[in-house]
Image (cartoon, rainbow, N blue to C red; front, side, top):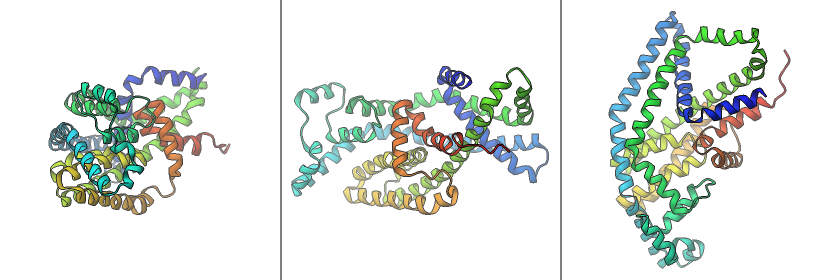
Length: 359
């Protein structure tokens, strides 16, 4: 009954999930900073203010220097998306003429769409592209909508990035305020929560308190580790993109890599697509293959050097299991399923169903 009530409450608050998630993330960051400063500054209130000032400074610098560039480069990428796909189609047709075997391996890429479907697509404002249909098959992650509709929806979302940023800003600012107040008064809040054990709500506390604490710990560690991985991936990718000569899109592509790094396995392929499209359009197919090589090297560094040092054996799941988790969670919960599915399943199988030591 208690868990059913909690899940129902979460469902009712689903429209505030971004605010709740950002508040958790910023609270975790600030709480860790406050704890690490304890050996240098004894007063906890002073530590909380210092960490909050540092966080606001970093976010302010990112907002001033990165957000405008991301907005401009995203709009440029969206406006040229059809030309990117047209260049891919052209290269595929040329390769199919040289190597007829390609027509047998990828027939959907080089055959014409039926006239009725082509006319329906063109009425939506985007010409038919076999590469676009292939992209949809790769990115749909369990969605049942048509191939073109999914890509168009994604482009529409990116094209209105200015409005999306304005919408998210309010949740972002509120989460900063809430997280600061939580961290500032965390010891007394913790005491207040523990006092529920001595009230008539004791059965609720005993049912969910330990599990919520454990899941928060697992999710916090996962996000903290993945943040480091995402940052390193973005820096290495930005350096590689600049070397390849497509630096005019470096901010947009690096931000895509950063956010996609939080989605295991699938995020690699999603972030690779815009890099390859820009490289092909800007400098040709040779540069695109160099971009693929760059992406491979970056993720080899991540998989064999960075991840083992950050994660160790923690949250190491078989890639096949990860793909199953992402497919199911993406189908049921969309973006949040892709982001939180793996940490949740890690907690479920590593903590929740384990028999606890009675001591």
